[in-house]
Figure 1: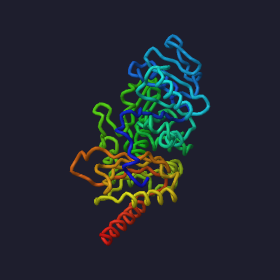
Figure 2: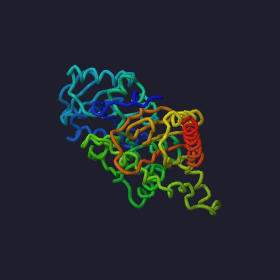
Figure 3: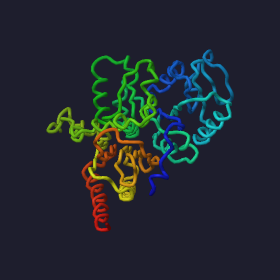
Figure 4: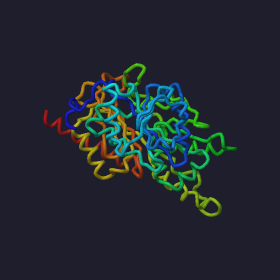
Length: 372
């Protein structure tokens, strides 16, 4: 991690964008997938599914099939995970290269309902073959509008799935009468200010809105930092969202309110910034110190850094303790060259993290002055 030049990825073009589809059991992922697979916008997309059976592929829609790969009418390619995800992803690359399967342009990986998406994201970031061929585009999480609030109350895992998402799909909205989805939507926005929350009924969604959450804008082939970081979403008002306006009514009918949202209350999202150019080694030391103390509670970190040792801005992206190789981007898109790091954490608040970062970077800046 010491030399940014060596760890930069190539220009981000050859690596295929991957979307990870996650969501709690019964949250409508299967309905969503069925509908997506038929959508004409899915041509040149490969979908890796845990089990074909669950999705119930309509055989009228299937062109040809080998034991684990099916090409749909829509031009979408389905593949089941045989044992190991890493092996499946590697074999897809091999078969695509040999022309055994149609050349796909993007990949969706469907996870099992209870899964924490982190290990899949780690695979994309660290496996030597996979990380040079694929790049994480985004995490799509389905939340059931009917039972979502209950699931969030009872399962820290489902809170985490929503917290790390780039897109949150609120499913089964057609089954609800009254204001419930709005309250759930509000709760999801508090959990994850930057994610787009989209209401979906009968699994009907345009694939267009699910994709292109990554750093590279596919239309222009250049990095779109503002859209990717979305730091405005982490403005100060979100720092105080843990008091649900129920202070003072601990007794009576609202007495249990704090209990119910206890998993949500753990989630914090904030943006920290640093004005002066950053010494890369000091930054790496800070991140490593942070990981050694907080590891699994750093749910997601994205940042754009003004690094002394690099010619352009450096993009960083981590999930818990694992980071993508940093990418040096061609140029700054605005006059503002402040380093900004957006974090979604569990139980870690902004102030100590920011103070620690400043301490590491200020110390490095001082030692440079002494050394010069």
